[in-house]
Image (tube, rainbow, N blue to C red; front, top):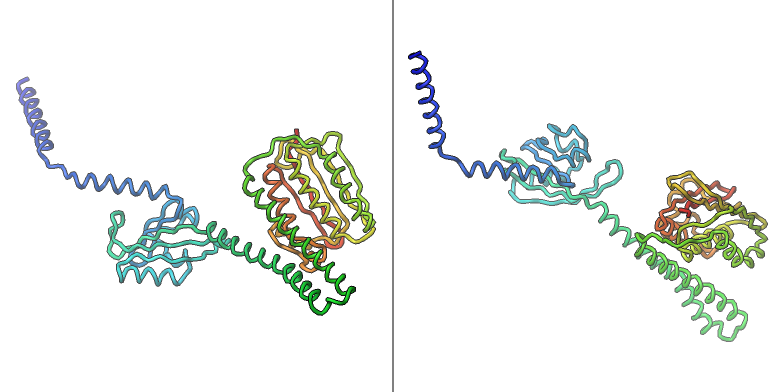
Length: 380
């Protein structure tokens, strides 16, 4: 019993000694803070949508955040950055950043497989997170959408300028001719007055389409809530085209649904279907048919919808162009389009209006057989 008591006392004394030692041991506050900061920074980097790499002095990837792994592949660690981003200018600037001990940034286009545009910031080390000498941190900022938007604006301005310049030059030339050589020639005056009228109408159509497109884009996020009777809408539209239909001897054949109430904006749907019928007439030879059908439809992604189909027997669209015909100013046949008086904006307008209505569309076409455009709209 005595031995047990003595042993217990020794254990207690030893425990008190250890406790006292721990109490008196100095705490390295800076180390704790640094570790916490390091952990916080790593968490932030891991949550970034942008790509982040840490390289050693041999340009070997030692760390990549989840966004980088998702974009460039999950097995990046211990690979050379040059095998991931095959751009010589990147390696050149990494070397410069290390030698000059200065942050560099470069713009790079990467095929992934579609082209992406990045600004890459190259930060020479060591850093708080990566303390190895001559290490480098790469921070990739995705500028793809910004670059595309800038290109889109540039192209749009160029296209608008070109489209407006053509009729303006024709108007200017006609006026100069009327005032000069044709001033005393009534027949020539009549000819150039006709050109003035046609080109003025063309310019007016272009400006109107641009205004429509701009308005749609401004409130594309606002979904229409009114009810529209598609049968009645088409009766009005077809009657508006009676003269030109008779002129080309084109017959419109209707197949309407019993119920054809959709949720939408009547004015904008009128614009869509008027443009589509106008295209079918313009790009069809004489003595042909245009088929309009309206049916309740349970296909596609819409739970309850009505399908409106406009099908012609016209010239058709080559398969390689179908995916691009809804782009602004895109024309399959530029000369044919100009002869027909098109602005190149009709299908772009259709696309934006259908998107605003939370609908869908399909374009089916064969050269010399005709084109069918199917519109799916939410129904009541």
